[in-house]
Length: 125
Image (cartoon, rainbow, N blue to C red; front, side, top):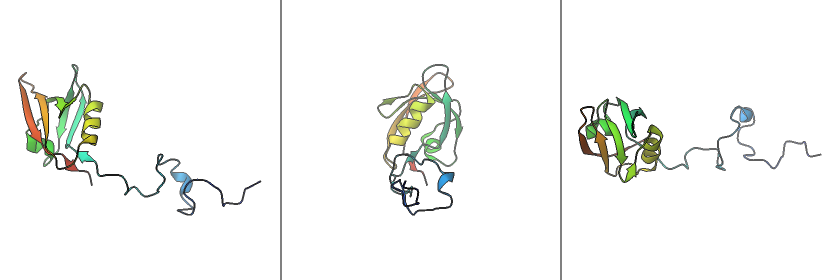
């Protein structure tokens, strides 16, 4: 037995109508997304490069990447002390960054030259 609606599941009495529309919001116990810490953003779009690195294909203006001097075609090789071999590596490194704290970016420009830039990741709102 036990089909009465007072089940011992997750999230009792939050929203009875649309509950099945979101099958799984993850392992967190609260229905509200607000407990999650604020994430950081660099304000760039990147794809995997042919060589190790994340190639910048879009720069948000204004944004932290733009302010640091990143342009389309740049390849990010390191984000702080984290080596960047792919766009996924860059995304993970940025997600772990603290908004407002300076980070050094190691970049290979389209011309072949290397440069270190300083960026200040912003807050995702």
